[in-house]
Image 1 (cartoon, rainbow over the protein chains, first blue to last red):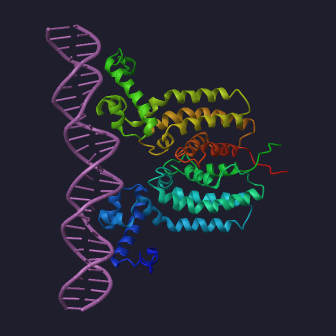
Image 2 (image 1 turned 120 degrees about the vertical axis):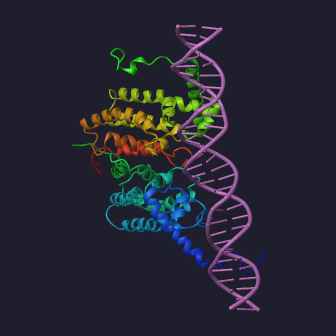
Image 3 (image 1 turned 30 degrees about the vertical axis):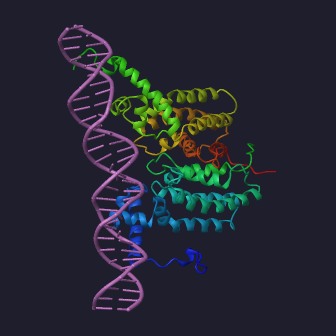
Length: 199
Length: 199
DNA sequence: AACTATACGGAACGCTGCTCCGTTTAGCAA
DNA sequence: TTGCTAAACGGAGCAGCGTTCCGTATAGTT
């Protein structure tokens, strides 16, 4: 192995212009198709809409999860940012509730995103890592603040809570009788220490 | 139309012997395959194991949901029975917690059953009706008892709670870090009226 | 033994995800 | 400008799936 440039990651040369263009086309097309047909839309549909071939889509985004992550990266960032912000405001449990509401909004407006997150832990590992792993630390901080303040008993791990919220969002579109937000709020209420049922 | 025997449902003549035999073979095969490969196992795999053709499986069970329902019918009955029993014992919230635990057990031990319940509301409509619709009334009774006793604020509908429990069970196998039971118990704890955080 | 409604089996079709490789082209250097 | 090559492209092709359809076999009856 050569001594200079031992780290290939340092050496990434810039992509070709057409490659960059196609990547952007794919992101735009995917965003549109996800809205119309959900994140499980056929790969061909996305490729067609972007005006590229099958090979191109797989070269830029080896798995569907990579594409989903790329499309929603900004919104994930936003969730992290708001969560960190909330740490400095209000009471911990209230902050956690507000933050959870934000996550629910994010998940239920993307058709099938929650499903994709939970279904194939293997196939969607990248998506899992991107969303769960980014948000779990924030969740952990909010939970820790609550525990310190005595507002939260630590029965649930940050990871568990994060996935619980995600799971409760599954199928929340397409069924008006199902209210994911209410359930998540109830779940968070259940984090509070033993209830004193007193008049 | 004839006057006698106007109702065709009354007139169902008995199935042929080979048909009954095949139906049983399919149920046995499906039960085995569901354990091994989950409820999403390929139809061919079930047909092969039962030693029948593709046509036969579709004739007896037009949709996958029909097959799943048939396989787990007894256990659904059991859940209904235990739930009704619990109404006459202990405090309402405790009964609800115990019952929810039973449901969780049922769902997490069947690979992918919870997923199937939530995924295609259309495709699995029969499964949905069979499980959700059977259990929702029981859930409603338990919730109502809790409300009457003042142990439960009525923020969540029976249907919503039922689906929430189901959703929390999604993906609970194959991830030791995820504890569906703990989350469901927390959710139920959250049903209690406003918490008094007093020393 | 003959007959027929009932049931069977599996080839075939369409739709998916994904791979592979011959072709095209962007960027550069002479 | 021209020529060169690594980079990128495109889509035919394969495999796996659910589902249908119809020619064949048979249980039960007469």
